Structures are given as C-alpha cells and as structure tokens.
Amino acid sequence: MPGPYACIDASFLRSGNHPQTRLNSNSTTLTGRQAVLTGVTGGMGEAILQGLLAAGCHVATIGRDPARLQAVLDRAATAGHTGRATAHMADLADEGQLRAAVAEILALSQGRADVFIHAAGVMEEAAWQDLTTEQMSRLFAVNTLAPMVLCQALADALVATEGQVVFINSSSVQTVRATKTPYTVAKTALKALADSFRVEFNPKGVRTLSVFPGRTGTDMQRRLHEGRGEEFHPELFIQPSDVASTVLHLLQLPRTVEVTEIFMRPMRNWMKPGAAL
Image (cartoon, rainbow, N blue to C red; front, side, top):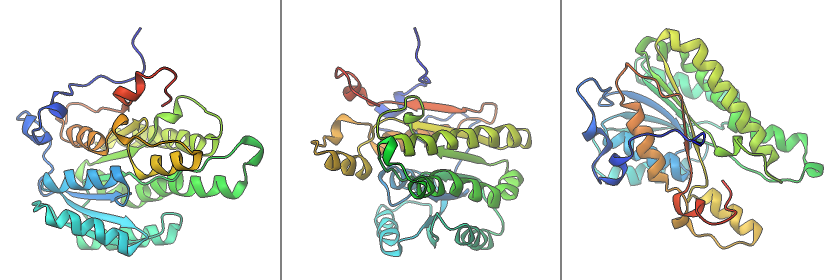
C-alpha cells in the first residue's frame, strides 16, 4: 500500500545536472527573482541559498549572528553564482526585528518579493514531565511564530508577484516520539500554519509548499547524536543538497501546478531495521 510520501521524478537529482536544465518551456524561472531566506547558517538553508544563487536569484538572508551569516555569504561568493545575496540581521524570536528586517529588504528590492523560504529551525528534547513553558515558547518562537510574522510582512509583495512560499518542516509531524514532544508540537503547528496560508493565498496566485525531510546529515543531527552518546554517520541520512535540489525543482514548476507537500526520508538509513524518521 502506498505510504504518505509524495512521489516525484527524481532523475534530476541523479543526473548531476543543475535542476533548472530539466525545465519545460512553461516553467517558472528564478533568474532575476527576489527571494527571502531564513536558516542559511544551517546545512539545508545554505544548500538552498547556493541553489537559488546558481539559478540567478537574488537572495536576502535573515539571521542573528553576523559572523556566521557573513561566512556563509563569503562561501557563496567564491562559487561564482550569477545571483547576489545580502545579509539582514534579526533575531527570529523578536517580532520587531523581523518586521524591521523585512522593511529593509523590501526597501532595497523596491517592494518586490517573489519567494519566501523558511528554513530556520531549532530542536530541543525533553521528557514529558520535564517540559517547561519556556522551552515550548523558544521552539514556537522560531519554528512557528517567526514564519507567521515574516509571511504577514511579505504577504502584499508576494501577492503582487504571484510568488511562492516554502516551509521547511520535518517528518516528525507524522509520528510523536519520546523526548521530541516540543519539536513535534511546534512543527505540527507550522504545518497547520502553512495549510491555512495556502487556503487564503492560493486564490491570490501564491503557491505554498511544505517540505518534510526525515533525518538529514546536518549539524542539528550531529548535536542530537552527540547528546545521546551515539555515533553520527551523516552519509546514512538525507543530504542537505537533496533537500535543496528538490526545493529548486519545485519552485521552477509551471504555474499550472501547485505541489503542496513533499515528504522525504533517508534511503539507506530507512532500510535498517527499526530506523526512525
């Protein structure tokens, strides 16, 4: 029986070609488009940034750590991409800073925004009896409330361009596991947020995609494994570039289709008995 995982033609992932080379004549181009991206100091976010820049997209990144953000932009600059990237400082848990960052971004882009991607995310683990309201508030602030605020601030610009929104979520929304309650609850709320945004903004021409990766070979997974005293083998997991290639492909689909959800899981890790998402 088919599972809940969406099936797409993944040959573009294996071919070694850039995702945009497989587009048909009605596809959406990213060249010259304006994107807003969070989470670029994480593995998936940086991979998405590289893909957007390679496609000729201009990307405004939002983050709170100037040194880490600049290091990511410096690495992108050495790749010789045709797109350009700018850095804008904001703590994702601070609504005022987020709205100020968006105002700055729109002032520089003359009010234009074609794509918003929320790739930022934080995870904390706790047993049920150890949960605190402070912990839940921290996770909701970044994983749920930040994308809500950013979507509100960018909504008019996205409607004007019939733009696209991508939420990088997590496959943890499918299964609640011990100690992952704070993360799962926040990510489940993000799914509901994305679904409600889609219902309201699809009639206005805005496409909304939620991506649900399973375990991915990022620093977040490394820290989790270290905290549990487990060995970390990133080669067994989804690669950040896998997520980025999928997002880039879907952003460039023709305007006749809206892909709403994509679930991804590690191929080799999944085949191990008892392997978790």
